[in-house]
Image 1 (spheres, rainbow, N blue to C red):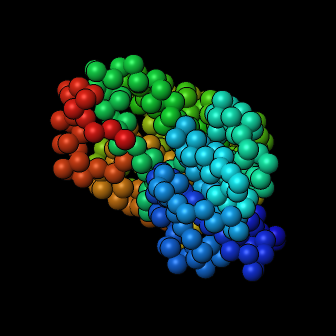
Image 2: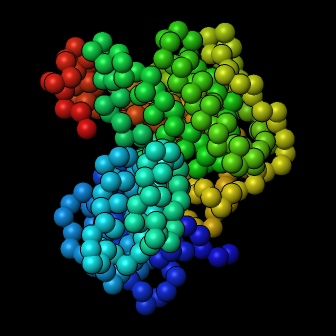
Length: 342
């Protein structure tokens, strides 16, 4: 099979070296997936931060792996604004998420448009923390969601989290039935926002989340805290109270066919190249406000209890430690000028 995406760009010519330019969010994503030696082995000779001063290398092409933010896009445009030569010979641009229309239009009007060879949105806006644990790398979201001084940011923050969760599902080629814990208003809003984002992905990729074979559980379940473990066990047994845990959309009927795998999305949780996407059912749990180590461990334990028939993934905006949890709580009554936000 011919290589695609970043790997294809790097491998266009064995003798042509390339520069890899990243911003802080994309650097966090890449460093959670591979080592620097892995990057160099693919033909990249220089790795640089787009927000730092860089020497022009007009003889080399550059690969940009960037989050689609105003700051990163402006830095990208600036690399191809100078005279008499640009900073790099050509550009291969990969955005980690959907680029907003105003920024996309600005790119089209800039001089970059004359030298760009690749422009793609790869939709990878999360960190694969462990094989069954993910993080949205957004610890500040707790402050934006629950601090009374940030009430105006609440809707925007929920939309941002929903977009990131949707990229996780798209990467896993999942179009899940979404349900939430009834009670707090923000859980319902987040669930509906995730569904809206997934519907947009499915419009581009109709095969997203085609039904897979569901296994009938034939195992004994242990009962202990944390509470999320009980929720996981009840979910895989289909015992969750539908009034307490309502669905945003109806569950997909079971089928024996395996979902088609789109070349557009990878499988971050698989270690070996060429391993097929999982055919069995998955449970993806998102915890608002951070996920604790004991909750992460529960995902592995429930997966083992099903003898691998189910795969349970868990994640949140960030990973909690006792100190981090206390720090998050202390911030909630602080005004914005007293809180170090990114």
